[in-house]
Amino acid sequence: MHIDMQEQIYGLIQPFAPEKILLGTTDIPSWKKDIDQEKDAVRDTPPSESIPFLTAKGKKRREIVSSLFLEIRAASTSPVETRAKAAHRLRLVIDSYKGLQRENLIEETGHVSGLLNDLDKPTATADLATLGLTEVVQMLHTVHNEYLTLRGSRVKDLASDTLPSGASLRVKNDATADQIFRHIEAAYLSTTTDDDRKAIGELIDRINAVLGMIKTTYRQRIAQKKASSKKKKGGKDKEPKQPEPPKNPKKRKEEPDIRLPEDEKPKTPDTPGGDTPKKPEGGGETPEPPKKPESGGSPEIHLPEE
Picture 1 (spheres, rainbow, N blue to C red):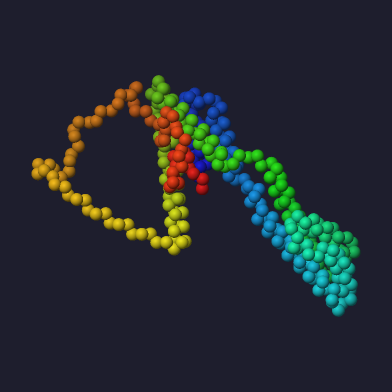
Picture 2 (picture 1 turned 60 degrees about the horizontal axis):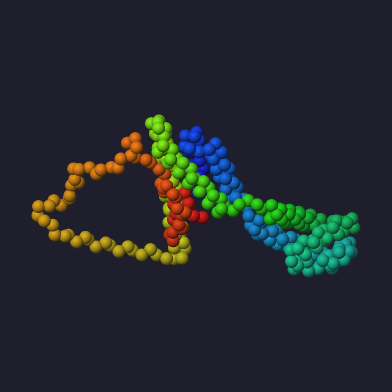
């Protein structure tokens, strides 16, 4: 949601010539680069999230090893002499790796590599074919190689993980957007042409529309999550108390029930050029850092983390 907001605002501001809104030529491209980096941070899978995949692949590998060992040992008692002899030779190989399924993943991985190396030798290959276990060993090769690939990718990611966190990029991009808003406000107040004032005013209106839409959507999502959480816990909403009818104060007989507004219009402060300056919501001459309210809300361009 935060990225979508940033991209919408960027799309509104980017068509303007930088000098029209008091920006440098590199300000907008630099902002876009940071927005793209935030997208990469959100899309990138943290190295820690690869652990469940490694664990699942290791479990599958152990299951195949256990099945292979079981079938070889069962075949060693076969009444068919050729099967029994082939199984006996293979037992001499697998008995060296007895219990590898209960080792830690690092030791297990090394021993599985050694086991596959021994089973790939000509004599073992022929015996596996006799017992009909060639396909099982091939499955073990496949799963083991997939495990090694996953582990290698995780190590590589851990070593090269220099991308800033999504949270730090959100803070940086919010600060950039806030500074751009201040420049747009200043441009609106200082422009000397009606056409530029009109164009910048429309830009401010569009920015405020985007901020308002995102804020509404965010509040709706929070409300839905709270309702869903309460439903799962089996909680019931309390019926709201009916408000008491307002007391009818005594009024003078000469006063009407509804007071009409005064004819005199309120005075408005004088502004240069006769126009009232517009500015994006939440703006000010000196923006203060946003405070995180207890309810989870925040200024328009500072949505909290999901």
